[in-house]
Structures are given as structure tokens and as C-alpha cells.
Length: 157
Image 1 (cartoon, rainbow, N blue to C red):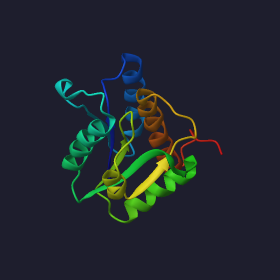
Image 2: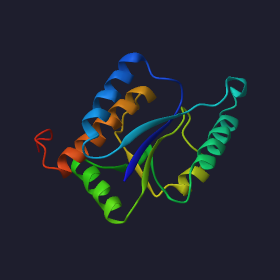
Image 3: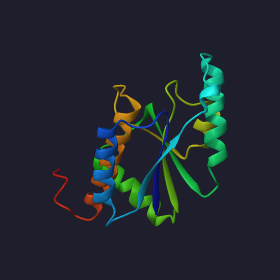
């Protein structure tokens, strides 16, 4: 199963890229994982929140295929612990999911159409974090989930 972390927004700061690369390298023996940045064109930048969300919706839904299993990250989603993340990944693998997409929406969230397309909706925390930090956190949690599934000593429960 491929895992793609999709994130709406700008390029990462170098220290974030370094951390993401670190966790992707550690995950590589278990499972392929990649980061896909979804950026709207600068000329489309707007202060109209609804218009921005609709532009992002179009970009996300256009990129998704029926074969993608979409997990939306949202502060109002289901709170899972690390063991539950690993169980969800195992369940997806058991079901033959080819590509699991973990979506970090835009600064204003996502539209109802994107929420409806999502197979699941998870929350990382009740706190709100900057998008770049969330990318790093998700990268670490993906590695942690696979270390749990492979009985690596990384995760101590």
C-alpha cells in the first residue's frame, strides 16, 4: 500500500523538510510514503474564503481517483491514538487499498464535497497546528504506526 500525505499550502521550511525526509527514510523498509504539496496559483490568491475553499476543492477532487482511500485530517475528526493509527493502516492493507491519501486541508478547512468524499476523518489534536508542523507530525505518526505493526522498539506503550 502506498501512503501519500497531501497538504494544501506552501513549500516547507528546510528544517521541516529535513524532519519529513528523516521519517520517510525510516518508514521506507516497511512501506512507501510521500508528500504531495497542493498549491493554488498565486494569481488565484484571494481574500474570499469560500472561493479559496472551492479552488482547493477543485484541485483535490480532480487529483483523487476512485482507487484512492481518503483520510481527511480535521480538528473535528475522530481522535485516534498511535496504536489505532496502526490498526487502521493494517485494515486498509487487509482490504487491498492501493493508495491511502492522508489529506491536510487548506488554512480555512475543506468544503463539504471533500468531507463527503473522505472515507474517514481523523483529528490529530484539539489544538490547531501550522500546516508545515502537521506534515512533520503525520510523517512521524506514519513511521510510528509501521513500527508498531512490525514490532519495532520505537513505540513504547
